[in-house]
Length: 398
Ligand SMILES: *Cc1c(COP(=O)(O)O)cnc(C)c1O
Image 1: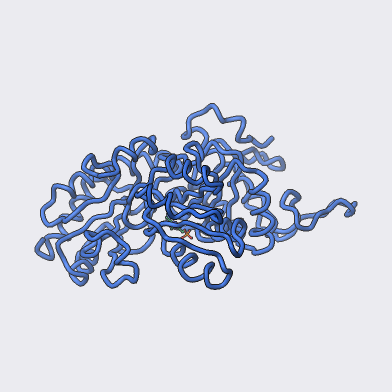
Image 2: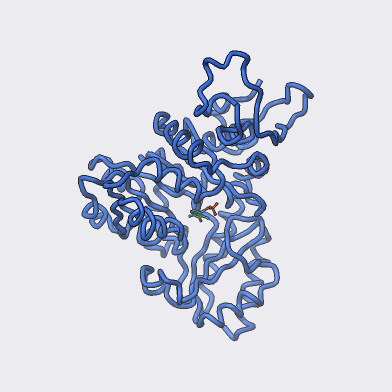
């Protein structure tokens, strides 16, 4: 029998990550779930009851595949939630949610600083192509959030901590504002990860996560999830966005992320600890102009972060150095163990400079406009990481 999420709900997240969604294979007794690379599944002999838009009956891979379903049980369990939908990427999940919820004439409030694809969807796609009214706002300013809401506001979308500045938004406070005005709240939880933050328990209606990052954690598979307790809306998302738009995850990627997710809580604990230590070191390092990490006591959002991030402050450190774009590139190129590449949440540490010519640079607070680097802390020894940063700073005379 499959072990269901409910069987494990009283256990710690480290235990749930190992056991939820897994089962002995009925045919072979294997203690691991098989990988089902099949497009089609045998139909019942009596077709009269088959609904071809359903996601319940295994019929065609885009309507749902077993590896996707097992991963969905796991992701829901990591959030203590009733349901999760796993799609082809984090952006696929964001799009599926927005596409299903919003229609022309609706209003959406979204963050001034957010993942690039969210900015593009609301700054130039949903508004221009579909007549959705979009309003950008500084989510750390609750009065501004309240003011941005109109009677047409269907959704408030936030990202906390945000990519790339690591600013923290008060989830419970924004949930209250949204709900008071009849709007829904979605939270991009990718930076925090399900070990550190459960937005549904703080009042959010939907959580979106890129599984490509910490949950898979090995830099070798792309996926995204929508998590919610609103089963009716989740069914709508499955029907409208998964079956009829099509961003379903491949069975192989679901299988890989399922495997990565087993060690996710342990990896994340280690990443939380190392990140805190490295952020504190950076804060004291000469020629570092600022360090944005929610775990730092000096961080203006530390108290809000402490309230809503229950196990740690995540694995991304945003910081600045006293250097121009070219010098920042030289620092990144001089690193020996930290990898100079985009993305975050891998086993290896990753560094990515945020160039001052980025089209969104003026949306960031002033201090982020020069020498800004986004650093994703990996599983290497934290002293080795610190040593690598230090030697690379020194190669450019910092
Ligand atoms: C990476 C990321 C996404 C997009 O996820 P993909 O899996 O790359 O599509 C969305 N939100 C945040 C905050 C991210 O860091």
